[in-house]
Image 1 (cartoon, rainbow, N blue to C red):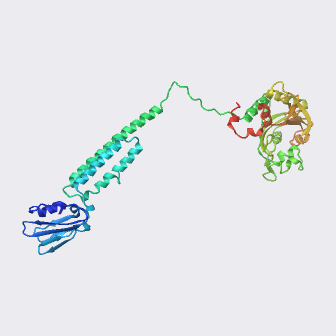
Image 2 (image 1 turned 90 degrees about the vertical axis):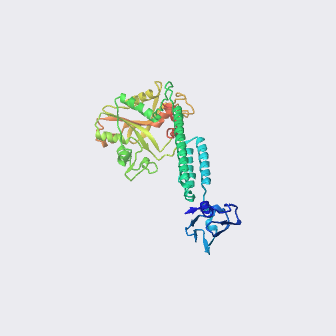
Image 3 (image 1 turned 135 degrees about the horizontal axis):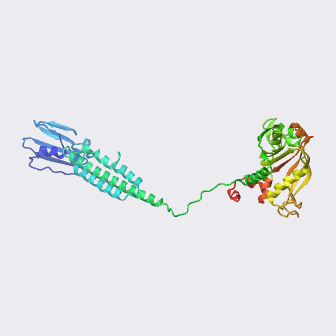
Length: 438
């Protein structure tokens, strides 16, 4: 089986007229050769394209009587008429010289591109472009079948050399880029051990917690203990045990968050008093800080959630003088030795007698100003002597024991302590505000 020129030379190797090639597209032409086998072969070619690539295979038999050609043959009286048609289009053929040139161009282009590559991602894209399954080199190798049998080994060896050269170039460039990236990373991450370290950010307590801790320390120093109670409370402990009758306004659903008819969110920490007195016999000295809930609109002085600190003392011979002395010491420890308080008569169902406790205005020191509305004092908390009915309801003999109780709003204490004019600042979690307190 011979192909292209080889086949033509085999037939015409001793022709008186040498093989002439006229490669012109869309031209009709005729060649005639005389062979020593004493018969004349007329090769009539009608082709659109390149003659050299149109003829795929010609098999010359020893008998010289006929020729088999895949493009179509005719035989008549020893004369062979070979008609080449579009079935032998030049796209199905490739010369070794053309493939060699393509391989050389691919090698030059790829090596130049690899050398100028500046990052690993671009290098990998070049590797895929030239060496991948759909790369340019692979596309050339797929055309090996279009070469003659004599040219394939040489072209195959050349193609392998080009592939090896490109793989070596990619490998070397990859190693160089990785080394450069490593050096750049080391340079960027270098640490100057002589530089001072960065101090980590340290959290701090909320101003409410700061003041609550101070109040706890003051009362612990006076022999008090700290008690705790549930925030979801029974109606009995929140109201009935504290001598609040069923028709009291505080029990209205508009003022209290009811969960069921008998369970609610506590409106005061006074409920802890009842739990303590039910489980502990006098003498009793406790404070009970915690959250409470009321159906209030949010403004500068009100919130549906706020904090209270309840105080309770029960023992023999407790009087209002003990209450006044305890609260006065507390305020002086919080606001300074020059702080003064006053007690105004008031009414609370769970204390008798009862009083509102005012603290001297921090702005005018008792003279009267805009802050205290000309009073010279600012209302701070409620207090009084524990009502005998409350003591009796908890199993404590009111003829033997007496006691005082008070409930102060923690937010009011904090606002008075730090001169804060709007309670909402304490709940907005604005770091610019909170970072001022230590």
